[in-house]
Length: 270
Length: 328
Ligand SMILES: Cc1cc2nc3c(=O)[nH]c(=O)nc-3n(C[C@H](O)[C@H](O)[C@H](O)COP(=O)(O)OP(=O)(O)OC[C@H]3O[C@@H](n4cnc5c(N)ncnc54)[C@H](O)[C@@H]3O)c2cc1C
Image (cartoon, rainbow over all chains, first blue to last red; front, top):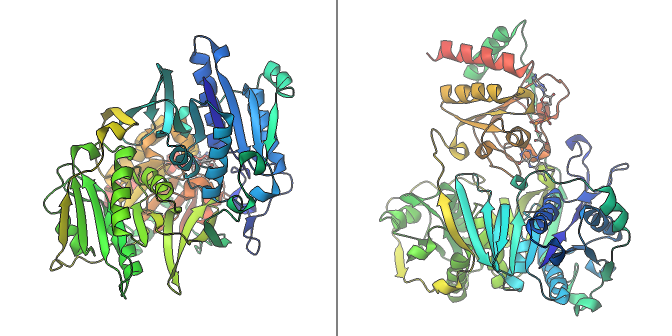
């Protein structure tokens, strides 16, 4: 079985909102000194999902896991990190021509990379990237490769050429099934991810990472990156919150509660 | 000249279209001003009698209704096939899709199937010389982007409660075009094999006028019992941060935020919540936020109309008492 995981490097989503800044002219997020980009947390769970599928196999040696990323040169780091968790090999789509790709161009490049990898059984990604928050790329890959897709997985079982997925839907329970190969997106509800083991970390440095550019994918410069993108970012800005906080205080909780209820009633909020 | 139609994908919940579907009609009428028609695609099983007239009352000119068991429960393969067929025939300039569990799966796939592009989770629309500019949240709620798409049809999913439905015009009439499904069941590859609906008791979070939410600062499941009590007293719904859900202090369905639900109540209580961008992404548009936190520098106070520096459990108990006094 060959599992491909598509992973993305994003600015650390857990930084305090008070230090988050955008450059409105460049329409880019300003990277903060002292904070390193991270693997998109949902993609980290896709790595975990792949490892769990392998753990559940009778013969784990039959499972190959490949991590693919498109991004800046530094994104090889997240591939190495995935390898330290147990991923076998990596592909980085690193080339100036890929810069400023939108979801459309990204899905096309990743789909081309997956096609080049050859026989695959599963494509796993996080439910969405923590920077673009769009949730488009995985479904685009499914369409381009004409594969079935199941989103928001919290539990995956592979058996007899098919995949069965428990989905993280907020109301109730839902299980879906699809024949392999298939694309699955992973939800936060999959649960905690493992830590790198010493053994895998030692091995990670020796695992192969291939670097492919547009030529390797049989794509011309016009169909990748900004040139191959379809959505134009007209503006990027930080929303302002025009609220003045009115502090409600008192000697003890009961007094504060009374004061608050009084104010809420005055403001017709209660 | 008559412009291309705007195609709205409606979802049915029980007997009628969802609120989000009606909100889409507001956006559609905005886009269709002066020229094109607003056509609604309505897929479902035993679609209620009144659905067509309700869609008409809120802005639809025509409804394409495909009533077939294959559309329930929702399976994206069936929906994408049928909607692609309808779009290929109608050649809309724009397709609007609810930003719902089903919509977020349908819209991106439809975009690739029709060889165009999609903007998801849109909260605003501006027309600049007739060119649509979509505003959407990104970076976990830390930023907004304004995007445009220049391939047709333009596809957008519209966030719930970002637009108000148009006032109902009961006199509006509508042409209903009922047609059979064209999906071959054999082409539905990803199938629902088990599904159970949750027991929804009380007010739904998404529609609640008052939401009482708790976070890590509440310290445990007991605090969330109090949250439930206060929500019930106020005729509202209970919510939580992801951290609280992860800790199992409350049901997962309570999660509000980037990867949870979006709520737009008039009043939002944030108890022991720090105010992370990913949480605010789901509640930042509330009418007024009351924040209770022991840390006066907590980020949540920047979004709060009323701030209280106190232990949230003690305060919650006192607030419940006080509300019981004024609303026995
Ligand atoms: C990709 C991604 C997606 C995410 N999606 C979501 C999402 O959908 N929803 C979501 O909520 N989060 C989400 N998060 C997590 C988010 O970043 C925060 O970690 C989370 O919202 C914090 O929850 P909290 O406020 O309950 O906890 P904390 O950040 O730990 O804050 C607890 C607060 O309680 C206060 N406190 C402590 N004790 C008391 C007391 N006794 N009385 C009063 N106050 C007290 C503290 O001062 C603190 O401000 C996401 C994160 C990532 C990276």
